[in-house]
Length: 281
Image 1 (tube, rainbow, N blue to C red):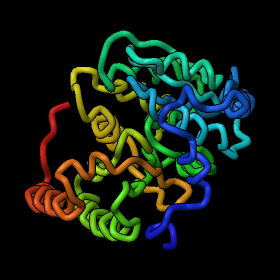
Image 2: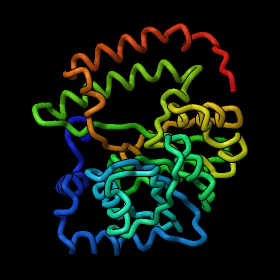
Image 3: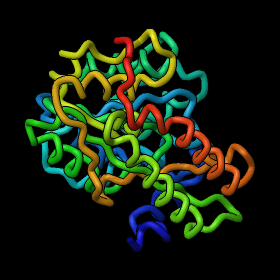
Image 4: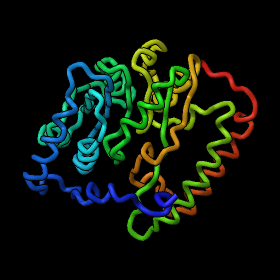
């Protein structure tokens, strides 16, 4: 509960990395490179795929969090450079991150390319502008070791921008997550976000991969199709809670407005949460 109203201790080291990455010291880059070497397994058990597009201000922070992952499982971490036009590619190289290039623009194409590239039994999806707890990989994979689970996902917490308290954001998250539970009866797949979910690679390919005809919601689509062959599992541990910027949440200008928007959206969906809804696949 403590982490709902304050930021965890592990986060600060990564927040201290400036969003002007070419001012970072060479010794810091070297530290990250050395730690990332252990995530280049040729015969991995786990594949972590991270699409990125023009993430120059954020990418080093995200790589830094992955360099601190504690898992002992054979793991490959691969960044999918989705035709970035800034210096994202240069920073991936400076951090010693394995990357592939995907020219066709769009998150669904990037995620599908990651799935086709993945060698591991377990496939974890992340984003290039978020912060991952040290035990994230291990915690997510443990959930997928249950054969009845075809999709595991975690929750999110927001990093408070200047002038916003972490306490207020924590309250917002608790209320929002309570609303999300309404979906669990019929439409739990709507709770699955692309920055924090996973599945067995074979299952992802079995259901047809990511839907590249959809410019958005490719993550929820994957969860929806995986629900046809198994169970969607929320991983409640804080070790599966991803931290991310509150910039999208604050798009309306204030936390209060963001909360009202969320409540209106969920109320509008109440009928769908109670009664079956047909989805074209």
